[in-house]
Each structure stands twice: as C-alpha cells, then as structure tokens.
Image (cartoon, rainbow, N blue to C red; front, side, top):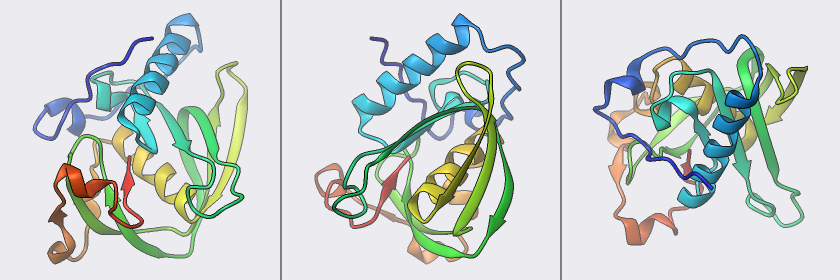
Length: 176
C-alpha cells in the first residue's frame, strides 16, 4: 500500500498541465494503485495524478455505493488520458478538493459528459456520466489541465471554509 502525500494549493505542480501517457505499463499501473490507496485513505471521490505531484494524465473516480441515493451501486474508474468528448446540460453544485482542504464553493458544470480514455490494459473506453459522476469527471480532468475548482466558481460569495469536524456533514459537498 502506497498512500502518497496530496499536495495543496500553492504547489506549482497543481497549475501545470499533465503529460499524456504513451504506454500503459507497470509504472502506470503502480501509479494507479497509489492513486487508489491515496483517495481511499483521504476518503475522496476522485483524485488526479497531479494532486500527488505526478504530472501524468491519469485519474481515479471513487463514488461509494449509496452515496447519492440508496441502491446506487457506486462507481470505481481508472482513466488514462481522459478527454471530454461530449458535454451537455448544466448543473451548479457544491464542490471541494483534497488539494484545497476545508474550502467549498458552488461550481457550474455540465450535467452530462462522455469521456474517452484508456483503461489499465491500454484499451480505449468511453464513460458516460450524469449528475455527480459528470461533476467528478470534470473536476478531475480539470486537474490534468492545471485548473482548480476555485477557478470555475462564478459567484465568489459561495466560497466558504468548513472546518474538519463539519466537513463530513457538508451536504452534497464533493471532496475530489
């Protein structure tokens, strides 16, 4: 198990574009395992490699079962070189980020997205997501472009700090 340190706002790597992965090899698979160990330890909904200081284009999405509503199966995705190829609709919702601990704000996102990526076997996959899944995918892909959720906030008055003990009860907040 390799839980990596999550870097925080102010670290210049969070503002850099990640490099495309050319070959899915054991090094990339180990990076994916490290991302999974780290996101689980942090109890986040997603994590991008730049958040652990690695400027490579890989993300994990970890939406637990029953997170949105009872009976939801949950989602676990590892996506390499993800690209949004289709987006539609609009939603505005509360977001947070493991790299900006304690801060949350209302962020507009597309309601539906289709993402093209590679899986851990190097095969092309397409993932369609709506609602929370669409939000998490967009948030994590933004990290690969050096964009943080605070950059997307339209109404800065919605940005607020919620101390650790209150974070778990912050309704609909995504810690990605």
